[in-house]
Length: 267
View 1 (cartoon, rainbow, N blue to C red):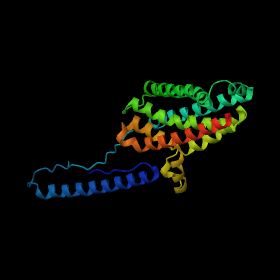
View 2: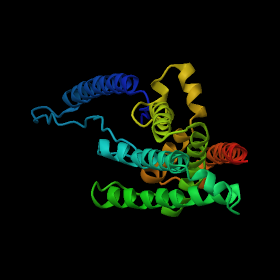
View 3: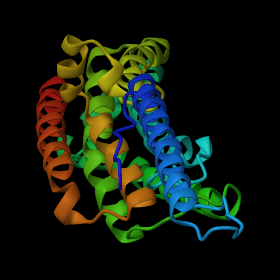
View 4: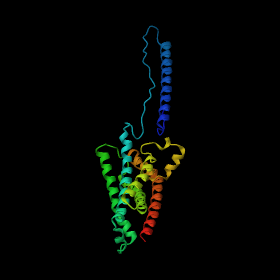
């Protein structure tokens, strides 16, 4: 007999597992008593009775993280948080720094078009974000021995989708900030709620229902689901396409709106 328990809500899962274990133990005791009674009644006169009878035991097996190592759950999520923090803050600070030191006006009078300036400021940080994915993945595999059951190329492709959102958000912060301190505070106020509602530290299904619906507006939620799915479950495009589609929609929307506002500010 197999009992499958959804461990998303750890408290409920523990109660269900405890009740199931007690039911199996009671059934095992009843089965042993019946088999012992049958052996006593059917034994030959004067022959010894062997009291050894089969037992029903409960054996637990956890999917995707059988050893229950917390690092297997948390380390893949670090990839998403590092990419968001690095690319978001660096993109916002690099453009605001031009305003702060007074070189933005010099860039505006050059033949460089706004779209070229935007690409020049964002593409290097996109490469930095991809490099961070490679480094953190190498550390996860070599130092923490996290299993990577899925495709690393798929992980890089999904990271590109997520980078569109983080770079777009950094670009937007650069248009509303006048100093680097403002950009840093803006990055903090953006990244902290996104981190808390991403499911990295707290399961989303344990949150209030209203907050659960609010997490659908958080792009990092989808990326963390993808990273954990690739690392622990070996999931592919056939399973992760809803999250990939959501990140693509958010990324294109945020990056396009931020680019339009960036060009308007320069004009």
